[in-house]
Amino acid sequence: MTAARDLLAEPLKLRCGAVLPHRLGKSALSEQLGDRRNAPTRELAELYRTWAHGGAGLLVTGNVMVDPAALGEPRNVALPAVPDPAAYEPWARSVAGTDAQLWVQLNHPGRQSPRFLSRQPVAPSAVPFGNRGVRTAFAAPRALTGDEIETIVDRFALAARTFVDAGFTGVQLHGAHGYLISQFLSPLTNLRDDEWGRDRSRFLLELVRRVRAAVGDGVPVSVKLNSADFQRGGFDEDESLRVVRALSDAGIDLLEISGGTYEKAVMMGSGRASTTRREAYFLDYAAKARQVSDVALMVTGGFTTAAGMAEALQSRALDVIGLGRPLTVDPDLPARLLAGDDARAERLCPHTGIRLADSLLEVQWHTQQLHRLAAGKPADRSRGAWRALVHTGINDPLNAFRRVRA
Image: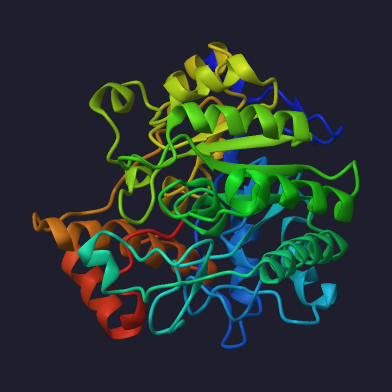
């Protein structure tokens, strides 16, 4: 246990010179704690204060949308047309008194903006969802013009500068899970014949370049990237590894590995049994990414024990252990792991035995726990499945059928 603790407690110096205090980070979880104008709330600051004092060395926010007209969920935090860094300073100060780094995750939903929010969302190409069940929740998108793409790139850069000015210590670009960056990368959703389609990685690499220019060389710039979309004909592992190499050459500081989309939600825990047994859904891919890049790697999903986390770190396939849903029920887990306690990253979500209900419950139950933390309450580990579903139907009906919030 001492050897595992020592590996977890080792600091990590990133390319830009910033130092993560240890190897345990909180991955992005969509908090749904913006107000009606999509500004951050006191509850959001309280939530991150709780996580920071719980010992996480890196805190990555849930997706902050760069355009208030393009939301993934109604209570996303979104950057207004003319942003004021002061609006985000209380959120940035939530980690004061700890050694935690707080990074903002920037995102644009593209076609993954529900019908009740966007009657006609935008995307690289006018490709609707192929999955019939998902298609009912999302309107068919229209293709972005070249000028609109440039405007979105500018919005990402402006958002990055705004949050760094507010006191956030890093930026992550959400390039996974089927959102806009991921849509540009996929041959299924990017059918363009211009420069944004002939090189499908151009949009992401231009975002990295423009964000780096906006925040300077000393601020960490990270990307969350799919190992694959797990869809036939989609963004596959070989192409993903080529993008990893390009991102490394572009000078990013940390790459977080994930996978899947709304149509194939592998990131929600449907990985192969072999990877689940080894406590990491994307560890095999991380080992391959290590061969093509020396950028720091973060893997989120499936880790349960300090020994499993230490084994992954010792393999040198990754550098940071990402924790997500377990921190909604045990916000002090990082501190306990670093203290050498026999702590586990538990998955306590109950089940109904009904497949559709349980796929919805996986998100909704953990979101309700997160909201309890934001209200200054402890997690309710005993909350039953049907109680959670009824709560969602009454208090959050617009998001009742969302399966993914990361």
